[in-house]
Image (tube, rainbow, N blue to C red; front, side):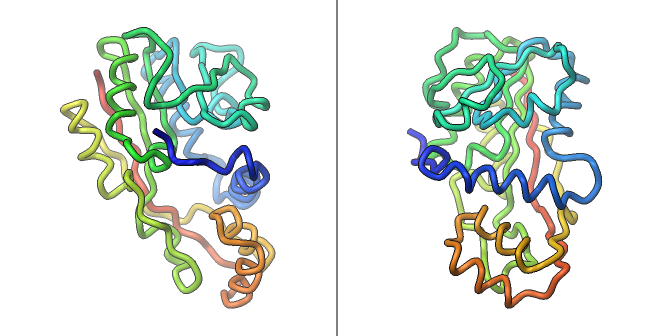
Length: 229
């Protein structure tokens, strides 16, 4: 089953993460933009977005579609803001028939599951033959500039292990790794918000921010894993 998310009990923290990234993004291309371009190049007509949140991937795709996007999330709060179609369901028990989708996407989401392997098997089941899987994961050494005050907690699906985990289910994978500055936090308030978005309690985040020199470029480390059914 999925680990307990805080997007229902604390949706503002989830939204804060998106706002900070969009506001201070270096360049114009986000991870969702990159995934959207992959879907367009693949010619996918029907896409399942697992862990869709409020619809960041849909916003990166052209309107009107194709591709047609179906959002899926366990959390009711972000789904209310998703433009739809949307489904509240568990990634470990997808409520769709076999071979229903041309592509399945999970952006930085499988790390929130205690059994990502089962979710990958479900993703493969609902993919049509030749269908495309795109999943991303963050490294355990992400945001190294923050290491004096914060380090990512290891998960069951970090970028170091993600390709092997996907290969166990799909047999062959393509890996795109990234290790480059993502955002520049201009002041201590921005650093505080970035830390809060990573589940650091507000008082500790405010204190920790004062110990870092700004402006602070933050390096994003991770991987995008692609596979075909």
